[in-house]
Length: 92
Length: 147
Image 1: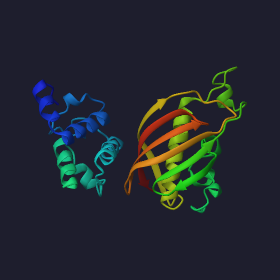
Image 2: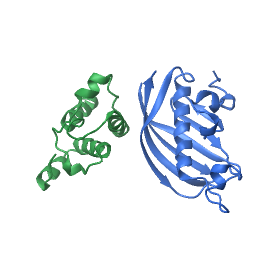
Image 3: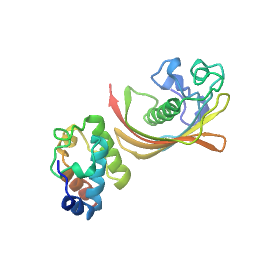
Image 4: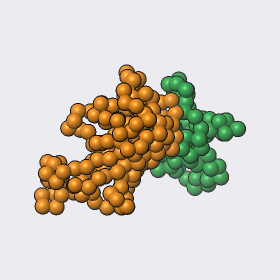
């Protein structure tokens, strides 16, 4: 996890990344500024399986992206960076 | 299994996995599988849950309005998959707002719309109305678990 104005400034330039982090923050009950791009959302941030559902539903609502196909894909999308890349790939 | 073309034939007590004491949807007036549902609930003034909340000034507890919306969403989910074919639904998140108190002897109408609907994960918006007055609204996320 990380705080600091530089980090906040960098994510505000990317709407997808910002919204991904907001979804993770909601599920993890943390301030968005405390979430680092490569934090493992399950291990480092304590998001559980229902929290992951919250993240993916928020992303589906916001961006219209599909839900992950199986548990392996969910477990693989375990950082803000990977989730943002997933959204970008789905929107491409 | 009830006909999806005849919402009034849907018996929530048959479709939902709850006993009668925990059933907070009485009937269905509209349903579009995979998209939306309209349901209703009505409490009698002497319903013990209502008369105790509060004695002399009975109000429908906000928690029950939320449960009504969540059960309506689950009902839509189960009807959308064919009437409850061996799956359970679990709520993952609820984000609710309350606008006005609900009273007994009033039809409490819930409308649920899916905001996203995948094979297992579902997002939805719901509201409870009494006449023209909105009592509560919420957004929710739920997941289907195969038994």
